[in-house]
Image (cartoon, rainbow, N blue to C red; front, side):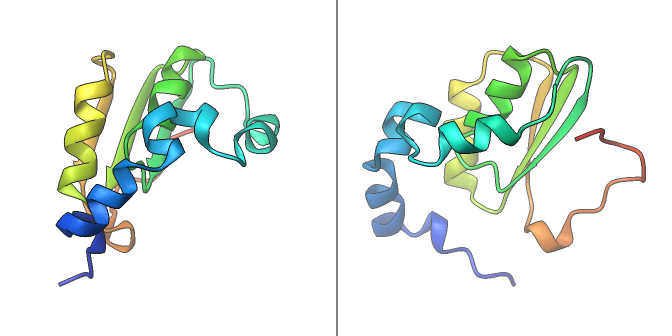
Length: 109
């Protein structure tokens, strides 16, 4: 069994109080730098590994992605992500990153 500290009640409660959890990407100190490195998402199939609350999944859709799959080991994180997501083209899967197994060419980004 993979270690999943993210569903621990104390960890999750503390994580939910972080700026990035409450404000989304704008609350993440590295966001402005990271955003400059991201590719054009228009028409792309995007995979977000360790998607957490789904902020990057939503960003990709808002910026033209055709579909997004967010993967995270945490059921609790994915519950929050699903609650924030209003795009039917975003799918969330609960899986450890090292166990992800998609067919080749499933994603562009």
